[in-house]
Length: 540
Ligand SMILES: Nc1ncnc2c1ncn2[C@@H]1O[C@H](COP(=O)(O)OP(=O)(O)OP(=O)(O)O)[C@@H](O)[C@H]1O
Image 1 (cartoon, helix red, strand yellow):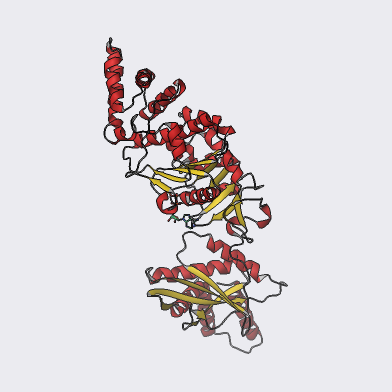
Image 2 (image 1 turned 180 degrees about the vertical axis):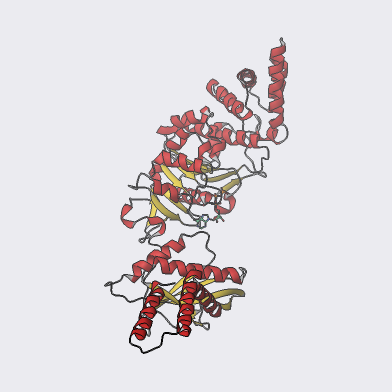
């Protein structure tokens, strides 16, 4: 209720007293009675905020009368159109467009929104704009109307010089548009203010692998340099944020440039993304022969198996002795390993016996069945064979290995074989790129074998791509050692903190991380002067 209504009260009393003093009316009880009733009514209206309520009821009924039900492509929608009217006042020139832009950006960032919003700007017959709210009819009418009122009020409060007036829609056009347009012509750019990143903060360097476009008004293409992949890549993000798609784009580009690409595909997602690549899966798996290496590697294999099976130091020692004995015999299968451990390793004391049987129990758990088929000294690839075999583009689908420990061991073994191959052959002509999905399964804090191998391959043309949905479970040194980081949407605060610390993000950028849409990412790369928000393109 406005103050102006209250001002009437003293005014009326004043006029009344004046009329009495001029003897124009008689001082009688009836007039006093009427005046008191009138004043009481005004106070009542003020107290109950009736005016506001009346306005609300009127707005609700106007909105209700302006909502259309329209069918497009067999789908029913609610539609409502408003013309955008600029309020005139005496404050001088008003920048209606900036006000409107601010309101639009605020509404766009509202992730809870169900309303879709369109703005129509027409040049003829006279320039003007209208705003349209619409939603699929699956949402109920009440919530569409309520959200419409809420959004209209929100726009008008963020843009105080703008009024949205409901108008009739033309429904014979492709998209329903208002019959009348308002005086304000909207000429803004909707993508411009996304995440408040301003265009001039980004400096694009050269690149030969295009990833997508910068998220700002320029939408310039952006990418990374193939030479930088040897300093490794980290791709992080919650599930479904677009990590595999991004990795597939890079894999495809590198493959076209002559790199040998090997993907350790934990969930079996890459077959459809990269159909031209060789696929190794349950019908066509690679059998590995983990013996025939020098002593150091026997120790490494012990470490790998020890890590996966969570062996104690004494158990690892017995395993090492068993592997050594197998190495001498030039024969390898887990059956033979078990036989050697059972028959040849002494178990004179209770303690020795306990250690031995605990080890055998753990080995049997993962190497019976499929485990026995994946490793063999007769038909398996040595690390040299494997390195030669995996030329071109290769997807190693690990998802058919149900036992997670075995899947981890097999993946780790392939990785170790490849790194060993590179170190042994010292072949600098080959460029190799290895993608490791769900890297937290391989690069946990305790896994020293792979971390050591990573240090050793620095000199060679090998690039690793570490992908993880939970970077807080990956050894922080490994994350630090990736020079290119592509960070998709991250929801968990712990993971956000780990990433923020590794690239020293500003506070506002950390806040952005959980708001990114699918395919959007923060890119940190040596060819860019500053971390840059990008929208990654979809793999072809
Ligand atoms: N840049 C993009 N543009 C449009 N859609 C995308 C983009 N990236 C991914 N998508 C889509 O989003 C979905 C999830 O993508 P993707 O599998 O790459 O995510 P992810 O992070 O690897 O998920 P997960 O961790 O579950 O494997 C897919 O349907 C994919 O087609």
